[in-house]
Amino acid sequence: MEAGSEPVPAHSSRAPAWLLGLAPLALLAVAIAAIAALGAPGLGERNGVPVEELAVERTTLRPGEIALTVRNDGPDPVAVEQVSVNDAYFPFTGGGEIGRLGSRTLSVSYPWVEGEAYEIFLLTSTGATIEATIDAAAESPAVDAGFIGLMALLGIYVGVIPVAIGMLWLPLVRRAGPGLVRGLLAFTVGLLAFLGADALLEGLEIAAAGPQAFGGAALVLLGASGSYLLMAWIEAAMRDRRRRARTAGAGGMHLALLIAVGIGLHNLGEGLLIGSAYAAGALALGAFLVVGFAIHNTTEGLAIVAPLSRTRASPGRLAGLGLVAGAPAVLGAWIGASLFDPSLVSLLFGAGIGAIVQVVVQIWPALRPAAGSRLDGTAFAGLLGGVAAMYATGLLIGA
Image (cartoon, rainbow, N blue to C red; front, top):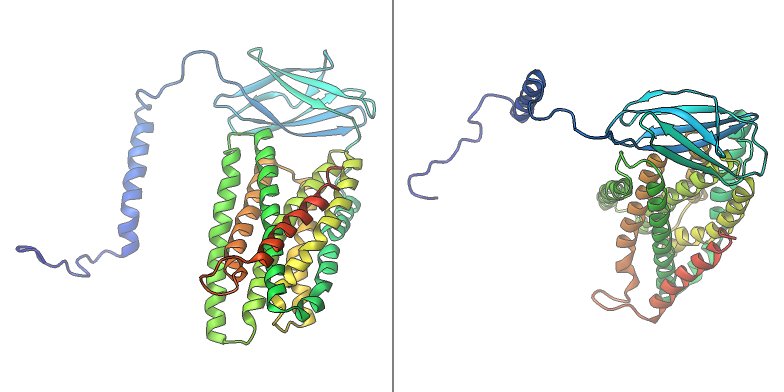
């Protein structure tokens, strides 16, 4: 201790700790209120032409009607005055001023023809134009009980059933030796790495096409970082619980659960794509996605059971792991069909990426034959095999 200094008492103030924490926030609120009361001197309105930006979030087609859900993506209010379809102006409803971050649905009376392509221009009050395109017109399905049931069935086809089929490889995994188990875990890492890269590309593409006012591509990074931290916290809590319980073989189940969560978040994104494709009327694309994802996801079941080679797991626990990994596809299909929003989808794709990265971090040490050693040929072969399997089955999705 330096000369002349005195120790500060642990409880030098009688004020509660929470009050001391709120004091700076209260001063900040007072400062903001003072700025508002004075009319924000020096922070007046901008000079020049207003910046008008609209993003078309959703296009819905009904007989004789085209509905566009738009969001104000710029700093200034926007008012849509006219709507042009294929270079001809048509009456519409839902106009008026749209404030920053606000959204509105514009309904255009237009006798569209199924299968035809259309170019739509929105003319604002200042003469700016916003373009939207319809590649092939098709009536949007009504979001009713039957459609929601269909989305649930597709989610089961895509997520639950393929993952369950892949988990039937568990007997083979249990007969495998230590080298083959490392190879299967490496296969899992390769599979997850491919899924993470795929989710990143999809999320960034959707974020770029959607509104930027909520963050755009930054939403993918925000979702990834938040998901990674949440998964790390869950992993730490599970590790502490396992240490206290000292249950034999709990480590494998613990890792299998983390893998199932990471795959489940990715399957949530797959469900979003399928639901939005059907809601947009792209029925052929939706069918290709269902078949492609179903085959694609079968290998995910193997990834879940790979850590269970030396772990006893009851049928109930295995069923639970399968539901954790596959059931989110059902939720994703519902969201994509009825509540599709590019910003929300970008955030969810980011959440899948963060979960996958955290799971890879947990698995990686198990790929080495011994502590401190390097990866062997079996691990490298497994990594390449996982990536190759995902790439090969992924070709069916883009067919």
